[in-house]
Image 1 (tube, one colour):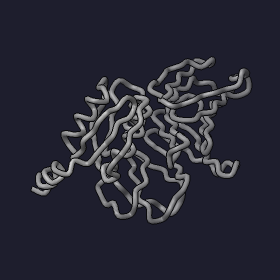
Image 2 (cartoon, helix red, strand yellow):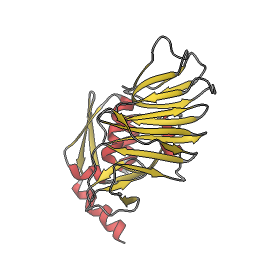
Image 3 (cartoon, one colour):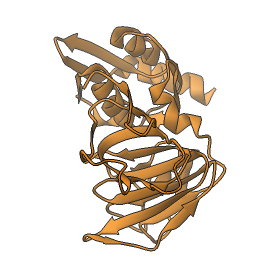
Image 4 (spheres, one colour):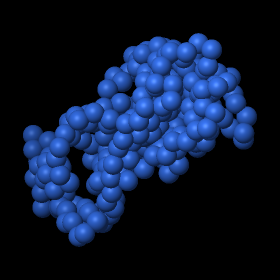
Length: 251
């Protein structure tokens, strides 16, 4: 936590690992196949080798590729597992009860999302793999299909891969999920005294800002107050500013 890294595998492939991520592979990597086990999030720039398939395995998804660039997100504490293709072609297989389901072929700017648990009245925010209650009707949320796997086309891949770059881009991200990402990035704990704050959405980019700078920026666009004590960030609803923000938005 609090760090991200870039490594080069024995076959020459490059991998970026997000905070709170582990990647492992056997000593005979590349002899028969190139198989890795991922927990967390990784971006892969795969060296082409037709005779040795490149396989990324998570707890609920297996991705097979040759020469390509793609992102896999599979944190154990999140509701979804996803793979996003930037370049090339990949096969994605969802794994349930230890069995691989029918493979899904992804082409550039496509993304597959597997929901660990799904309800037909849930809503889905395509920007951030977020499940929301049916009562939420804000722009950017779309009705989920009655299945646990969805394929999205013509996606902005930068939203799912920029975490590895100096400029991290977010779009219509709820504070509840943004806080989780910030916890990993800065190795902090976020505590919400008012759960209502979790539904506020933010768009923008984060580069070299400190947590204080980020929270000050968020405070300018939403009625929140915060305090930082050692490694804990406490968020509160600023009721006085809430009415002012509501008045401005209504006007």
